[in-house]
Length: 282
Image 1 (cartoon, rainbow, N blue to C red):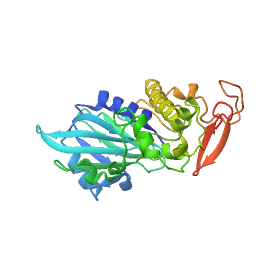
Image 2: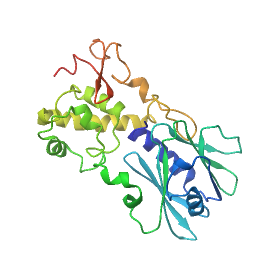
Image 3: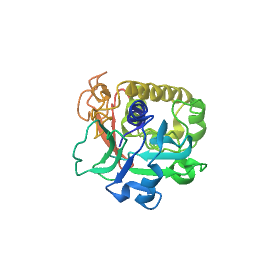
Image 4: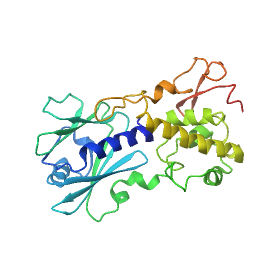
């Protein structure tokens, strides 16, 4: 699943390519791609005639502000889920069989939403409605990793007394928004913390290292355009470059880039965890 760096890469691409995009036509090829309104036809009619303005990101969610005739026309929300991706088509081309939503402007340029697994979702939020009233997943999100609210002190308060493995805690979107398997593994390696360590047992200096590592690895991946792992692609169909520099993720059995110890792959909470038993010794 795309994580914060991949979603931020998509947001920046949409901001550059689609801001000012006047929606002339919308076609929904898979009804389940539309979470709200309840009928795809209502989603299409809500977007046609709108101009896409600013693109925002909250956790792994994307939201575009819409205008029609100079007035507020609500928001268009998107979650890529596991395999959703946007593609910009400058000229008409036949859609692949995994195309779910097609949006054209008056020049017949197309923004195409392709989703192999069909878990991605879109919403239209009417003018004046709070985003979280329609995109209900927003209610459960914790602070953004780059926000002042996310700090070592915040982690200490939220993790106090918790017996959850720290890797499992980092995947909880209510703790911190946008972090997934890749960057949890990477940040734990950089902060020298074993993934199975109980969250409530982490010392203040460990939490400080973890906070710093998480911010640094997310910034590095955003700068690289996301990761090469999974099915992520940006608007041009290109995947990111961060995966080439990964310390542990998907490197099970390979030598640690620091000490040479074979990287271990364990299961925690049903998710794979990659770590170095030497560098991250409990």
